[in-house]
Amino acid sequence: MLSNRFILKDSTNENQIFYHRVIVAWISVIVAILSIIGRLIFLQVVAHERYTTLSENNRLKIRPLPPNRGLIYDRNGVLLANNRVSYSLEIIPEQIKDIDKTISELSQIIVINETDIAQFKKRLQQTRSFIPVPLRYRLTEEEKDRFSVQNYRFNGVQISSNLNRYYPLGPIGVHVIGYVGRINEHEMEIIDQSNYMGSDYIGKIGVEGYYEKELHGKTGFQHVETNVQGRTVRILESMPSVPGKNLYLNIDIDLQQYAESLVAQHRAAIVAIEPQSGGILALVSMPYYDPNLFVDGIDVKTYRELRDSPDRPLFNRAIRGQYPPGSTIKPFVGLAGLEYGVRSERSRTWCRGWYSLKGQSHRYRDWKKSGHGSMNLHSAIEQSCDVYFYDLAYDLGIERLYSFLTRFSFGKKTGIDISGELSGLILRQNGNKNSLINNGMPVKPLSLGLDKDIC
Image (tube, rainbow, N blue to C red; front, side):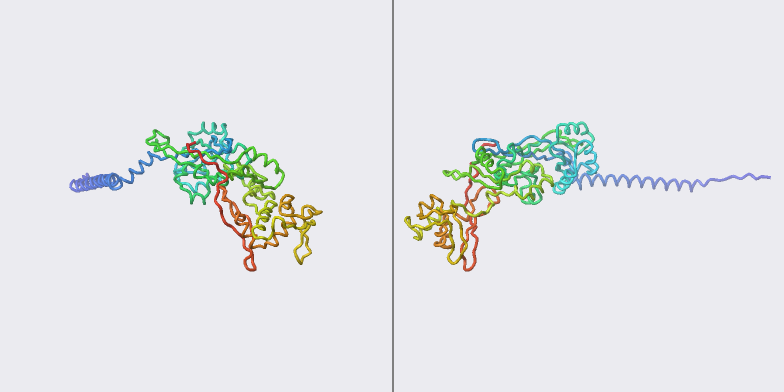
């Protein structure tokens, strides 16, 4: 027999449970609301300035406007160093999460070799993250078009057009003109970086290096508003760049070419100077090399070939070669003899074709093996008699010869307006030792001047 059982509900207990749950829910809602209000207060009040700045930085950009480099002409207006349009592929580091993956994908569209990647990563370490870093220079029209079609896939990658240095005459006059190259770490430390933002090149040697400040110009800036893709919406403010000034040289490029052709197969140097002004009409050092190789960065193999060549084409013999004096020094030795009374105009020396120092058997040969016979100063200069000047130099002695020759700047630098010049060598006696003279005399024989007008 089953009994009927009735289950009685405890309403009071259930009400208390429900009441407690309501309180917890309300507390949770209030805590959540207070957290949101606290966060809003933090963002809008405490961190307002910081986030406003970040927002503005995302929306507003300052973009550099690199200046056009000044051109270089010879004395007759022949163009020696020009600028021409070149396209480069650039990456903006801060807009890309995986740079290696991006480079790998780009290499499927255009040619990017290991040297390009290595140089890019080196520049990447030297550049701020918001500044575009070149990955490939001098894109062909076909490469530019192929990337343009795929551009939508690569946020933070762009093609920029630049004016790159170009030397239309190639190696002709390279030791005068010099070349530009990419800015290295050492140069980055000493230049005004704000004036080189957007510029990858700097003058290295020759007049390109000596007149870098005048040729480079002044960088301008654009204050632009961008969208979320980083594209320019409008230009808010602009300060145009100031192009570099044109440089006119004393060099006559026709004479330069002719002088180079005379010693084309030799290791030699020629300097032609205009007597009236002291300006240099031709400065030749052979062999030479093509400066265009250095503009975008010379490859390792080619540079090693130039550096290790026994002909030393990178060595400027005209300003760094230290050679024995030729016969052009003889008139100065003759003047020294007259100055100190060691010889008179009528004094004569017998030339038998050779000369020996007293007590020595070694013979110093004259260019004329049979000898010149009896020579005075006039005839010795006229016939370039070696023996006459050997004997006169010995009678003068080192001290007097040194003292007189330095009056005419022998042993001193000319102060030519290209870097790397070495002085000539003159020995003087200092007790039992000899010392080398190395002084300076400032002149500017290469440059006629700069344009007063902007290029």
